[in-house]
Length: 255
Image 1 (cartoon, rainbow, N blue to C red):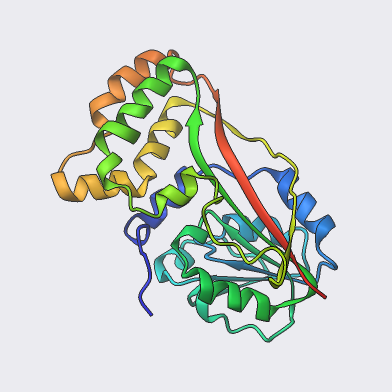
Image 2: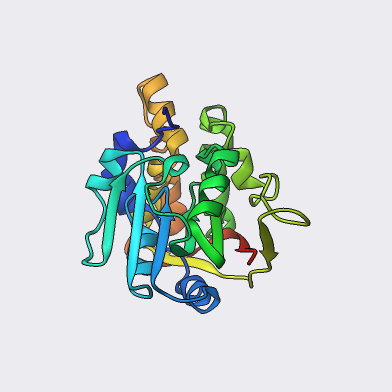
């Protein structure tokens, strides 16, 4: 099947420039899972979440349809990486204690993926999907970031980005009466990293919309604000806190 491939062409940049997810999230998932035998990380990309799960689960099965992303994933003895779409998982039925989707659910065929998640999860198993949207540093830096995010690359964001900006609240989750999952309220998690200005600029360049802008126009939109960002940042070696809007949706497989 075809898939939305917005990252294979810059998989290395994506791996090196993306923020890490909150460790407290993974601690909570490990506590909420019925046991910690097997976690399936669907749409794993470069394995960022997979590696963190591997420190808490005996085995992690990590899948992504992009061979380039899998090739750039960090290896661990208890992670099995597979190039396959989330809608066609090769795990046996009722085999996983946890299914996770980190910053990728908006690319999936929802009905087909949720059918797979329901098939693969054990009764009582946990499903969790999360996404981070806009970020904040300082008012001066944020205004320049918004020039790239809204004014320059705005037309180049795929429509699925709207799901992220809405905190996944507009995705038709299989929760509620008669649905296979009972929704689980996740606590609030802070997503923050301390970056220098070079790391922040690399993050802006890792956006799929930035890469699409470059392909369409032959120029780098981040370069138009880079000097001003550096000026607003101050000391280029100073590490500033970057905060993201972070959203988690969870459900437990009915027994």
